[in-house]
Amino acid sequence: MTTPIRVNRESDLVMVTNKQNLCVALLGTLPPIRALSSYCYELTRALAAHFKIEFISFKSIYPSFLYPGGNLKGDDTYPEMNLETVHIRQRLTWYNPASWICEGLFTESDLLHVQWWSLPLFPVFLTICSLFKLRKKPVVFTVHNVLPHDKSLLYTKLSHLLFQFGNHFIVHTAIGREQMISHYKISADRISIIPHGGLDFHINNHADRRKLREEMNISEQDKVILLFGAVRPYKGIDIAIQSLAEVIKRIPEARLLIAGKLWEEWEPYDKLIKQLNLKDHVILHLEYIPSNQVHKFFEVSDLTIFPYRHFDSQSGVGATAVSFQKPMIVSNVGGLPELVEDDQFIVEPDDAAALAEKISLCLNDSAILKKMAQQTRTVSQQLSWFDIAEKTAMVYKKVLQNR
Image 1: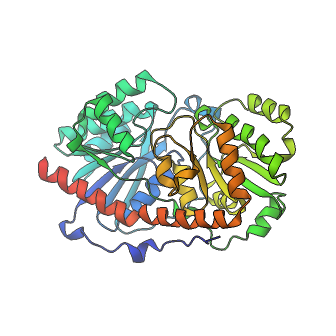
Image 2: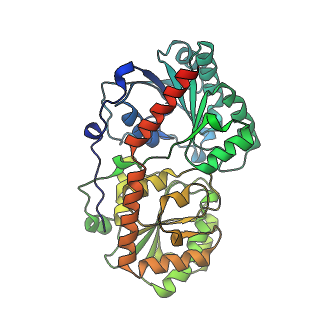
Image 3: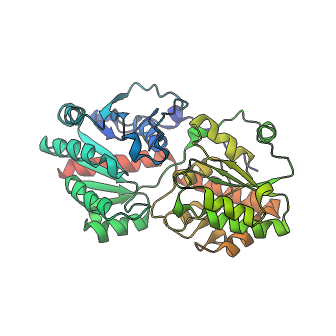
């Protein structure tokens, strides 16, 4: 199978647009805050080759009772980002509006680029965006979840209010663009589609698959299907478990590795596993996986699956699988189909039998897995952060010309 190679960002991203000495303020999260930090980390590194960056991040992002499990412990395992063109300020706190007002009034930049994804942040983002507009600074939104994963009318209504301050909007998929037009009545010429890039910083080029499998008590003969990321209702965990029951009839050495923090009760899934007599075929790591541990789960796996019931955007976990050039089977929802080249590995949601059929096809034929990995490598090239930075730079140029 193709070995992923870390891209050298500093050599790949040449200074191509810094002639204007443009300064961009990014509003989002960076480590140790978790949230969107993986995406923001890669985006910041890419844009830093073009512009001076003022990154507005959080010291304290939510009250703990608003976060599933109540655990908001930070992740200090991300690689350091020491770039001369990046100035990071982690001053925002959910409980201190003065911190929001200070960033909105005194951040020196030519425009504000907002990463919008979470309802509890609405007051913070509304304050900062409105103050930037008051200072006649354009505002660009990247809308990561045009509609919430878990249906919420309040999210849609408050997003609509927040978007009144936007000059231009970036979404990750064509579906997201259509939703922005239909739900928020934003004109098509104010929306750009820019994909979610790969998360290459997770790659550990010194990882030893055999040793990692030994550590996880996985044998070399086991064929590992990875389901990675926060355990949430829309992820189709039960579909994956049901499909496994069919897969092991043909491939007894199949194992389902489920890794991610619980955002819901595990008991119904545990009952299903016992009911289907799958206890020896399911490997569980039901906790947050720190950044420097992510590579282990992808290295030991043979195949990744995304049996999502519904989804509207591109997936950060999918972007990670792309970085590791892992074969993928995805549901036909949101931007997931864009992560695979061969349509036969796109299945309809809620179809455990179809998922089992595709998993069995892949695990029974190493040549198919190898071809899928090569196709994922092609996809990873299409999700280049160099290209994403250039497309984002074009958005900035447009809004600055039209302000």
